Image 1 (cartoon, chains in turn cyan, yellow):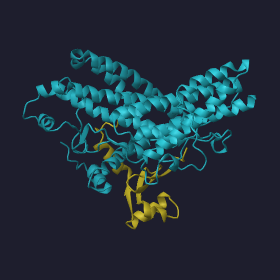
Image 2 (cartoon, rainbow over the protein chains, first blue to last red; image 1 turned 180 degrees about the horizontal axis):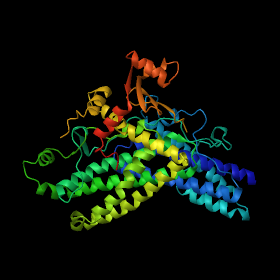
Image 3 (cartoon, rainbow over the protein chains, first blue to last red; image 1 turned 60 degrees about the vertical axis):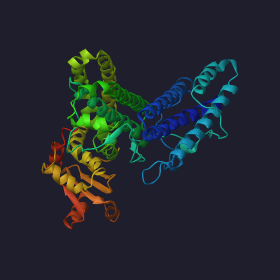
Image 4 (cartoon, each protein chain N blue to C red; image 1 turned 90 degrees about the vertical axis):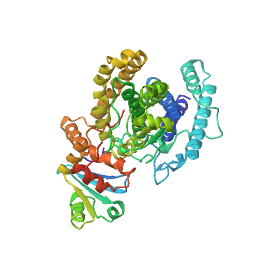
Amino acid sequence: MVDDFRRRLVAIRDALYRLGRQTALLSLIEPTWKSKAEQADRVVLLFEAASEVGEFLERYYGEMPFVVRWPQDWDGADVGLVHQGTVERPETERAIRDLAGAVAAMNGAVSATANHRLLGPERDLAERVGAILPSSSGHELPLDPEHWRSRLMAPTQVIRGPKAIGLDPAFQPIVSLVEELPPVFGDRLEDAVPYFWNLSVREATAADLCLLSLFEYDGFPLAFYRDMAKQAQDEARHALYFLEEARRMLPELKATLSAENPLAQHLESSELLPIPAEGRLLYEAIWNMDLVERLILMHHDTETPAIPKLAEWIDSDFCRRYPEVADAFRVIRRDEISHSQIGNLWLRRLLPDPDDRRAAFGRARLLRGFFLLTAVRHHSDESLETLALDASRSRLKRA
Amino acid sequence: MERTDLIVRELSTGHVMIFDTEQRDLFLVDREKATSLSDRSPAAARELAEQGDAWHLRRDDLQAITDALAEIVLLG
């Protein structure tokens, strides 16, 4: 009896984290920031539930440490990830639905059979897990899934996620980043508001970096996937906040702009918010990086410097005029501190030797510009070679 | 984790990148040509580059590209 419960709970734990990774794929391809954030919330719920079951197994059943992995010989086709890097959404949704229903059925069986007086903890656990699952489906969860049995392995990129993902229809990609940099934050509305909507795209891409990484990489303990899920949820929330805040301030912004201002003219003729031509703002660059490069270039080199910058902005004239934005910056700064810590933790786990980390930093920073150009290439008529030659000879047509 | 003295990776652009971590040189080979490489090593890529079938970016080139694009903020 005891071993039967252990095997069922292992199957539930593994299926929950698998659902989390499948739902991450769905969040990646969601076409709006709102739906991306909603799916990211679900990803967190699933990994938290998997973690709770995992901790229960350790405490009550002495279950040994394990690493997360996709099934053996799995190639992603069953979740709609096709060979050319696109996603067949109906397949992804079907796979999630079927697996969630199967988990619900097994969880229900645990609840129903944990009727011994001494199995109160199992009943309580099943009740909490059941709260986040749909109704049981006709699908069955294998009780002792050979292909999901976890063995320790080094973190490895076992699959590549989608090459292309959506852009919220609020935006209109226009001029390339290599020609014109996006606006920077400033005290005037005409600086701050465009900055907010451009930042919202960068926040969404930061969410995607985390979702992509937890989907692609096997071999970490569950804590890594929980951390990536938490950060994805934070970044998706930030993206939605900055987009909604920019839209809320648009009427006030328009009132301050002169008729001759190019931005005023654009906003007069279009409801779409202009952003760089690269659209998804460098998602392709992230796709081309490995996890170490992502953790260095985003978590360390971008998130960490944002922490003191946010503190400056909280004290800015703009934030004195708009204290609700100051409050938002305070929450976001709290989040960025946690993201910096997440990056530091997992980079040190991947590269415990300081010399290896130093070499990796050098490499990632050297390749940074090249990775950016791979993203630009997807939105340009120029070849990668031409873009690189122009950049290396500083022939960029920068406004 | 993959070995760090040589990095071989398929890119979204249709190239295979071969990065020599000692020399800090980058070679870009078309995916189709990369499949015919007997070994995906800097030496093999260097040969292809000499034949005009691969593109070679030296460390200085990579640094110049990164410097030129330094103002672009990567993410939020």
